[in-house]
Image (tube, rainbow, N blue to C red; front, side):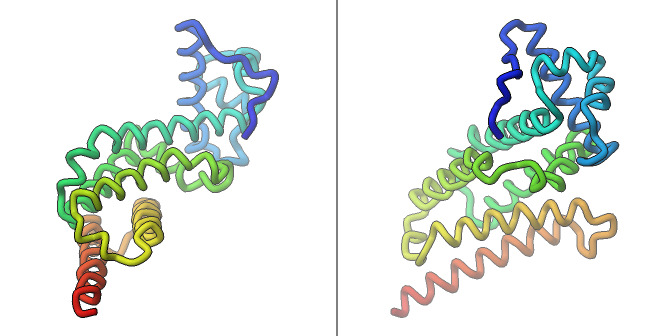
Length: 210
């Protein structure tokens, strides 16, 4: 979403604190009122600032949503990026479990405000704004394959990696937003890990036979 010409970028510490408060208030308002029900007045009231102060930095609530999205993307990158050297040394089941548990913990932080955001994200998160996360996960996949060279025998690895990663992410979101899930989260994680491991073992077995 393009930045409005009205939007002023914060440079001083106090201004940055105001912007951060507005962004956090956006998450809270989204939880309370949903996308359609949230207004700039709601956000400003929760942030403890006047609506005029909000408009110094954001032209409308959509720009606040955009800043919220960028915040979540940064959180996901900060969650995974520093741990890549450790993650690539895990076996597939352990890697999937580590990623899914960490992702769950992030979504449930602060009374689940990120989880509620993700359930609405398709409404206001342009596809290209997910690119930092896609790049991060593809980088993890590439480095993982470098540490496990046998995986280079898998056909169409980038496509399979994309499907598995996104399938796992949306499965976790679907699970956490279900008030009465049919399975335990631990069982879900093990099931996803087994599914991927069985697929990899099967494909590698085919390549050996051929």
